[in-house]
Length: 111
Image (cartoon, rainbow, N blue to C red):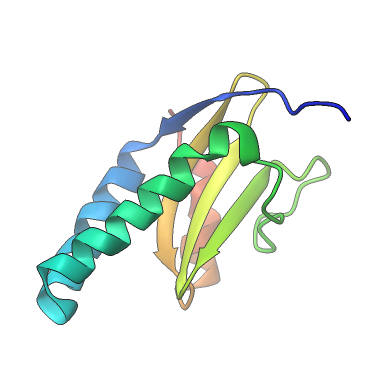
């Protein structure tokens, strides 16, 4: 069985902004412990992308021939990432009810 090439995981500035916003919301609504637990779960999934980037499906809002845009579904959130030849670029974390236009802006994120 062929082993999947390990790639470095790189996180965008926009993802950092999204995660801070998500933590603040979670802290206000669910409390500190629940917010910390959810953020820890997100980072666990993101950091495991170095070898598991092909596990998740193509993001249906960002179709390409080579299926380079993928998303992790975590509850009501989408973690959108891009597979490049050198690394895995984690672009955004958005609520799944975000507008399609907002999701499509993920293509323009540069690292």
